[in-house]
Structure formats: structure tokens, C-alpha cells
Image 1 (cartoon, one colour):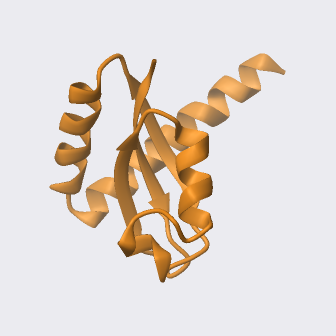
Image 2 (cartoon, helix red, strand yellow; image 1 turned 135 degrees about the vertical axis):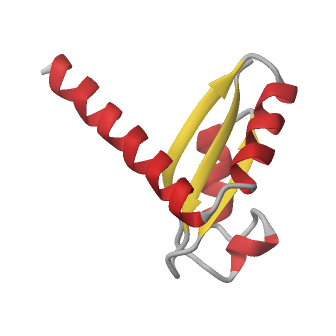
Image 3 (cartoon, one colour; image 1 turned 60 degrees about the vertical axis):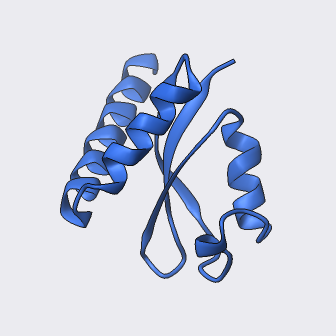
Length: 93
């Protein structure tokens, strides 16, 4: 089972970082207002970043690292991740 560290962009523009072992289900729960207390009043949320790990411990460690980052660093991480996805998509076409 894979474990994920992820970031969401909330409806008010803020960022939320968490971890899960079922990313699709977790994002859905956030958007249903059944996720973290923080995101409930900031719907809708959009998945903007993810990493996967073999263990829960690794995912939780990465979550803690990201939460300590400044907003600016988080945005740079998201931008880098999204550019990487874009390049991978272009290679597949």
C-alpha cells in the first residue's frame, strides 16, 4: 500500500498539507466537508501536489517537513511538481 503526502489549494487560496494511504478518497472526503477541520470552511479544495512513499512513517515525516516551509517555498514546490507533470504529459503524447 502506498502512502501519500499531499497539498491542497483551498477555495480561499490557502494551502493545506496532509498525508493518507488513499489519495483519491481523501481528497473526495475533503470536498464533502468530511476532511480536516481546516478545509471544511474553505471549500472547494484542489489537489496541487503529491508524493508517494512506501511507509506511513515516511509520508508523515515529509508532511511535517512541508508544514514547516514558508508559503513561498510551498508554492515553489508546487510549481516544480506541476512543471514536471506537464513535461511527463508532453513526453507521452
